[in-house]
Length: 125
Image (cartoon, rainbow, N blue to C red; front, side, top):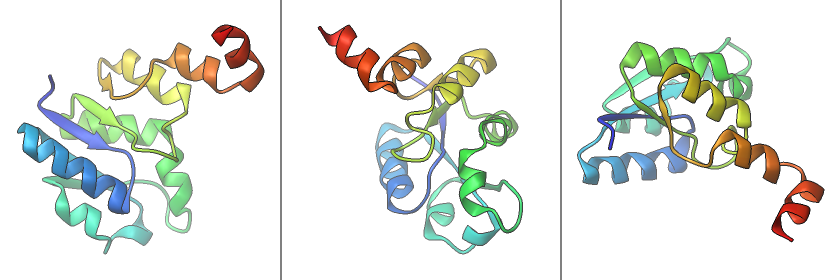
């Protein structure tokens, strides 16, 4: 188990993850771009950190290096991507492994395989 999870998502997705973490006794970290500074998800987490450049809110949630940096800064030992954004990005899963952070989701190799429909079907067969 881990002690603190960074949720690399926003809104209701993040709030549900924070609730589950709370029930497990796990600390929570939110990330947000400037444009989401008043979003409720950042207020529901134990800690929150601004990421990204002003004027590029979606890009902030897609920048693996910023997510990893926020996790390191906050002391989070796990990252949960939720769904959408980085949930299917093998780069985040691989970066977590490199940083010694638990990725709450499939491994990078599984994400690479399932990211290509033809390869996924061939592997399933």
